[in-house]
Image (spheres, rainbow over the protein chains, first blue to last red):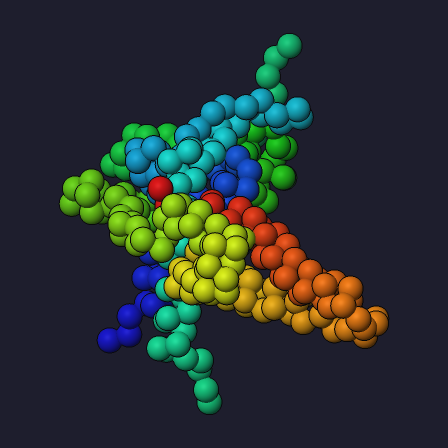
Length: 110
Length: 192
């Protein structure tokens, strides 16, 4: 049986990728979804909202409504102080972790 | 002023999406529908159809949403982000001590103080390999460079004073600058 490795890896990091995107600038759902779908991190906008709900419930992300100049009012999401701390903690672990995995797994050779 | 009418393609899509999302928790269901509705608002039928095509089948979106909320049924703990407790070398006080040793360690215990700072630097995951290499190589390199320049410039007792001054002060100043830069970089990565 072949395990979907990509899906398992995405599950472990997608929350932090969302925090990382939102840490750059507050963003509305559609734009956030496009950024994640285009990078292959989520399958559709349907994947995004349950994760956003969990991040909000944990106090890592908050939302606010903002009227755009030309378009409709949108719900924006931003990282909270607690979310920034969580992201910083993840960054600390990610570099050494990725290096260790790379050392152990190596690169694909023909 | 009346609001522009919603194209039928948008109305039908949102209605179908809402139907497909039946059973998904209210907050998630409303978030998805509202997030898509606000993006489609104000578009004409042709532009809206194009956006809808890029979104995909409502049934697929709903299935993804259902799969995403499923872990909640096993309890909130299963979905909580868990980060291991910080190691000593990841904490902010460690950053302060390391930076202080890099900057002033050599004045307290000649050479050994700075070496202790370098060892602490390499023992911590807060700095990148390049940052560690710069902190290790640059101060001695500055010292050797200054020494070489001043040695070539002339000779005599006064010149040897200048060599001593340049060879010591140069590396210390380089270490202070590097210590400040590295502590600022690590501060955000460190855990309290």
